[in-house]
Amino acid sequence: MDDKVNNNERMQWFRDAKLGLFVHWGPYSLLGRCEWAFRLDGYKVKEYAHLAEQFTGEGFDADKICATAVEAGMKYIVLTARHHDGYCLYDSQASDFTSVKGTPKRDFIREYTEAARRAGLKVGLYYSLVDWRYKGAWDHDTYPDSVAAMVEQAHAQVRELMTHYGMIDLLWYDGATVTTWQWKETEDIAEFWRSHELNAMVRELQPHIIINNRSGTQEDYVTPERKIEAAKEGLAWESCLSICPLSWSYVPYSPNRKSAAAIVRDLIEIASGGGNLLLNTGPNPDGSLNQVEVESILEAGQWVKRNAEMVYHARRSTLNEFGPHGPNGCLGRWIGSDDPTVHYLAALGWSGKEFWSVRIEGKVESVTVLGTGEDISFRQESFGRLILQDLPDMPTEPLFTVFKVKFAAPPKAQEDYSRAEWIESDL
Ligand code: GLC
Image 1 (cartoon, rainbow, N blue to C red):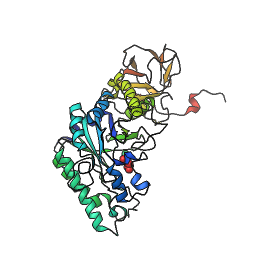
Image 2 (cartoon, protein in one colour):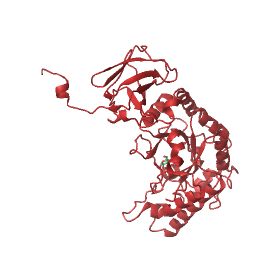
Image 3 (cartoon, rainbow, N blue to C red):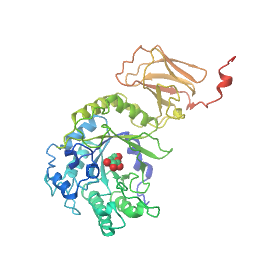
Image 4 (cartoon, rainbow, N blue to C red):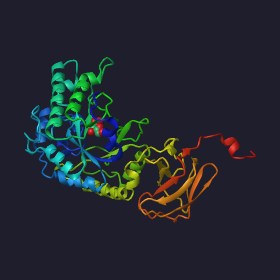
């Protein structure tokens, strides 16, 4: 990769951002049953085109969407410029299936990119390589001309997006493989999409851009989807999670959407592994944000503001070495920072006057509550117990209290060792 800008410098904003807003919106939103409707519900191209004629976007207010993201403490935003259904929310010369040639007569991507920049957000574009309207997407062997045309379209459209909308900070590819086509062992995804050539073009046009790993090449970061999974040390990562568990796009009724607490819990988990949370919302069919989702986003955002010192710049903590199941005591999650002697302990629950974390090797100098600065008294015991004491019976923070723990030197998680001797048993 011909990287014109220093890699670390280029990735810095992304590593510090921690929180971004993902927005899935298109003609499928009219149906209220998933952005995969074209495929799942067996649409024919003409039938789907007819649906798209009813897509007006009259409620789409890019400034409002971006203001919500900013208010929630988000630092970047990613909108579906084109999903697997092939419908472009922008002015493409490579296709007639666009919001400019269609009913809305609006270039939503222009409105969006300009609004995001005005709001101070880093601008991300989601682009699906596959276009389900092409026969070649479903059968590479029988329709080689259709395959060639689809790949050509992808190159042309990515070029348009990288050329006509100013500085783009992030390109979020998707859909390199999502049809029923069974890829053969001899078939290479990157070769199929000519991704090396495609990404070289992108980087030529947008030298600062950050590209995800979904075009068949590794590029800049990995994207665990609907799950939280820290990448190996040194590799940037972002979990994309949807507030609505059923779909990435609008669903009118979905009773177990993520609450603010669930969002913050996810964010804490992700922060402890040094990743980012790309939190997805599915706007209403008209493009306005879904109020139920906005409420959770903003409530979570209030917590983010109270705990900003920890959230932004959160790094993987050396104290969480033992995996996800309460290695340091069930109720706590450790989050690192740029200062190796400062680690944050997020209280996922509360056990009353004392809060225990264990197997912590390192002398603690002070413990304070993040947000209020209140000093917390503590003691350290054998088995690496760090016990915060004299706490109120119930936390005063409405979601999750975060303690800032200052160590005398960089701490370590204690090695696990044989319990047989340790428990001093007579049995
Ligand atoms: C998937 C799905 C898609 C969604 C995306 C979000 O690959 O195909 O509908 O946009 O992931 O991560």
